[in-house]
Amino acid sequence: MRLDIEQLTVRGIVEDITLHASDEVVGIVGPNGSGKSTTLRCVYRALTPDSGAVLVDGRNVAGRKDLARELSALTQESQVEFDFTVAEVVEMGRLPHARSPSRDRALVADALATVDVTHLASRSFLSLSGGERQRVLIARAIAQQPRVLVLDEPTNHLDIRHQLDVLALVRRLGVTVLTVLHDLNLAASYCDRLYVLDEGRLVASGTPAEVLVPELLAQVFHITAHIVRHPTSGAPQLLFDQEVVA
Ligand SMILES: Nc1ncnc2c1ncn2[C@@H]1O[C@H](COP(=O)(O)OP(=O)(O)OP(=O)(O)O)[C@@H](O)[C@H]1O
Image 1 (cartoon, helix red, strand yellow):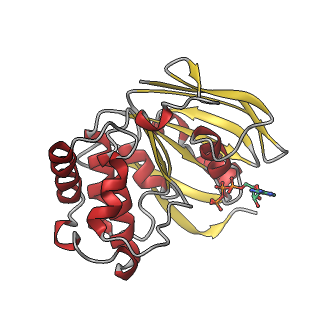
Image 2: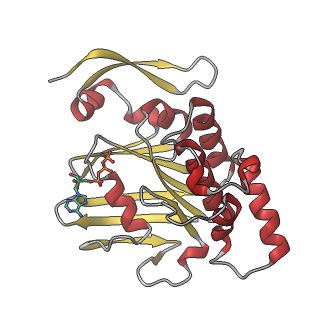
């Protein structure tokens, strides 16, 4: 399914952002405060842009009542305030769909197993560690069976094994994924294409190899990086100098 962000502008925070993703994993990277989360908030409709539009399969997301069946989001605000069990939290992913108890149970069990939290199913969500919570919220997003998945720093709180697991899983889903990632090496390994934001503007887009070049990394992130190829995957990987660029 196709996701198009067209000339999105939000109150001096982001300006004129255009982005396309279609059955691929697209990453948004950029320094703190560059407008990544603001852009995603417009996609999952937590924010209404001042101008521009977000289209899912060619239809504007504004006012679409059926969007929750097609788009799911793991956001910085995806918190669970009340004392639900892990299984109940994941089952919430089924709410936008017509209910079918046996099918819902199977999908919840699958989602729990996929992110390695089956053993936590009857635990209170509030009793979990940060990384366990993050995996449960990813399970909820998967249980929703979206055709577009929006993720704001999905690897937050995860140990390295679960970072790799979650991003590999996200790729295997075979749906359109738009994800904010801070770790440029993970972004280079798991994203088909990257968009780079700096001070609210889009400054580069393309494959990781096209985008993650020393000049751009110095200009946008103020770092010096040496680019090497991963010996098995061939993905570009960055080795950072300790000194920052002024
Ligand atoms: N509601 C708001 N009112 C005023 N400023 C805002 C608001 N929301 C975001 N901002 C500002 O807009 C800028 C972009 O914020 P945003 O959260 O989109 O950045 P980000 O790229 O996701 O950052 P980070 O990497 O730190 O998570 C920041 O300077 C932030 O303080």
